[in-house]
Length: 295
Image 1 (cartoon, rainbow, N blue to C red):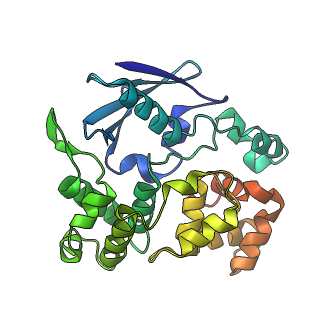
Image 2: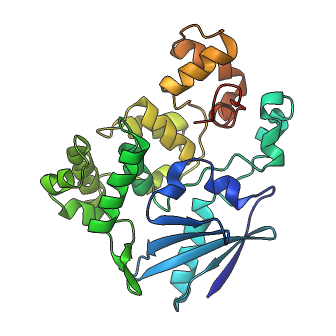
């Protein structure tokens, strides 16, 4: 089965894939020789399938080597549409970026979309796995969580889908610790329980009509989510009002504008304040090449 999905131009699948590190965490897998991004996905019916996504003229094609019912086809389309931000119109951001030499490359390379997971739950869990650790540690934790708790692909049981909140909630805190999650284990256990029991509606955070401040308060009210994690999640939700500020951001701003002198939150905020609701994207795709790679 093959689906054809259109994207708001300009669009580059690889710009989305390389926007940050999610493509290197399971259940995503990238084949750069064929230009395919694959993902093992559990559908609402319980069927586990492999999605093979490839760039096409004006958007992407999605191939699934299984027979799908009409509702399952709609679900796959909806999930890929969200993951790749196919409907996001970045024209206002590009118009501003044209006036800034450090962002002159973004429209030409169709930068601006952030690869995200089909669910806010998965993005939140992965964000927790990236805090206070190395990238190698994040990969190990994600691999352990997905391989031990996710449903297997019938044709290749070694490949598994991201676990549902219910599946994570069934694991004990000790079992989560044994997966290497450390101090995150109780946070993840409580998060999964709240979502599984309907106490916390994470998918409702996708509603663009909700004020950003309200969404941010909800995120900050989740144990384990601090200001950096909340800002990162807001960007994945298409809200760029806040900067995911860490030591790397302070170091780059220090070198770019302050001759290497130490700076704090105020200086970083001031550097991107003029970008308004686009400041998160301006920071993320700024040309930091004189000082090192972007975050």
